[in-house]
Image 1: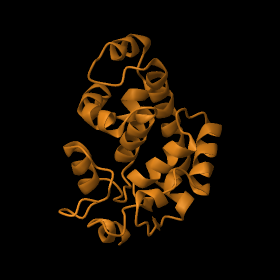
Image 2: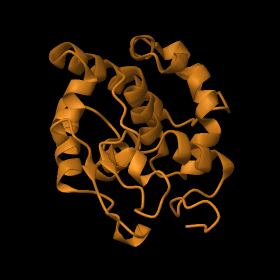
Image 3: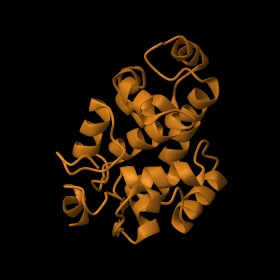
Length: 190
């Protein structure tokens, strides 16, 4: 933690600090945002968070502003166009998974009324508030992220391992993993 801003230890770049301060860990319930964050976590697999945030605007533009319905209908021609776009993560498996996951996301919306209803049910609609004092205490996965991963994989989702699911839980505020010394800890605990 830097002493001058009382924030968590992981944000290093300006984009990471802005993301941490304005988005990370704040409970999200809008399906459009929940889908965007799922895509960002999926795209991050094997890469640094700094890379993902630096390509976020490019992905927003290329991925129809994260419109799940439009993405679910991408055809092979557009997939090939995406693979040529230097503004995004150009990984064939991730692009194919983006489209598949969009289709499956819509199925969950239809079944549960919203993806929000589905995903937040894993924590009984109440964020888990942790009391970590250092990054070393923070797990990379939990029993709940294991369960989310298992159920999403069973539905056919790709790039949803337990570590990705835990990172997703942190990002959308299902768990408050701001360090207790972070100026945002109390904001995300209320």
